[in-house]
Length: 315
Image (tube, rainbow, N blue to C red; front, side, top):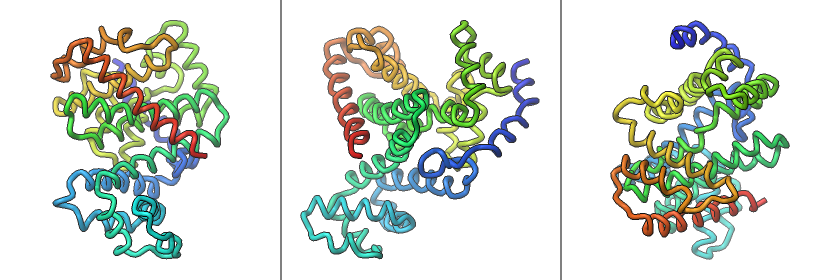
């Protein structure tokens, strides 16, 4: 019954998307300039994948970086500072492919990969400082924290596709953020229904006529995100719908989301989240005792909070 209602109401999603504000570089321009933002999304995703497989894609990496002057500048600047070279190359109006190639060789692919992650996250940070709505600011900061936490948890459980974990984290709350930005009145009605005890999907259908999963799916498809990331985000309220090959990424993101929400609480501690965390760790095939868990999660907390502090205090 619910699936039939969703299909019958899909036209409302299309009209909603057509009315979206521009959310390109700062999330505020995402929908109406979909072609340009799709390039950015796909560009960042491709670059992060390429920096994970440098033997195969070394030449492609330079070509992709050359497509975006801001990214090229960031990489050349990183190499300039790391090697204490003069800034002359970085300050020239045009950065050549040779400049990019030399910079990559000097700092290494891991440093390039990390710089790309920070530059992608800075889009959300910029929007955070532009907007005043606390609800939206909370989602933006939580998205950044979730993405970098997902990377560290992926390493802990030996999930190799950290790029997908990062992108899933950055876009995990994208539906909530866009709905809030486009229609705050209905978004507040939705929140009130949740406070009254309605489950999220029922509250979404009652408030918007569609659920956040379907909205997120349509947006991510337009931005050319890969199917496995779309599957995990679109079905976060419907885990039984997740395709088998994507279940480990889904479990990882649910685990990361649980930890992020726990971190928001004043009394959060490794001990307080152990019971449910242990269930997730079993599902992710990691055997670890409570003492080792406390040691690992403390280190992860510190890394994530340091990254968050660097991003949000670099203004």
